[in-house]
Image 1 (cartoon, one colour):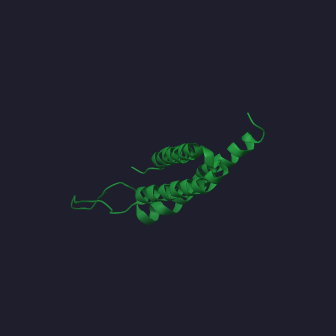
Image 2 (image 1 turned 60 degrees about the vertical axis):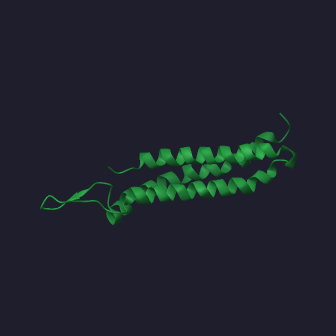
Image 3 (image 1 turned 90 degrees about the horizontal axis):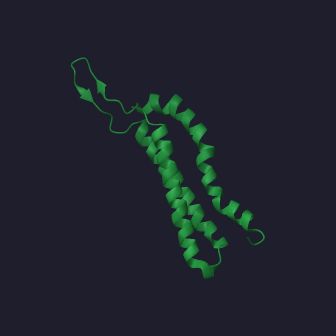
Length: 117
């Protein structure tokens, strides 16, 4: 392994840290504020038995939030791919695709862990 490769790899994977840094604060905001404001994903039944579903609830907001984090991580990966040499253009493409795939997987995992039923 060439000298400095570990440091370069750490810098290239650093944007994924945003998911783990944002998880606990967003989970707290989701439980204390968003569910009261937007409601959970549960249907509401009135006294006549009519079922109403909210058009936009806390689950939808959570999906939008993690999608925005995914876009931010992917954009920062596009910026950081300049650290990879131009001769290895294919490695840049693999890096960006891998960061997008990892971001989507983490976003989906965090979304399902915070979903209200």
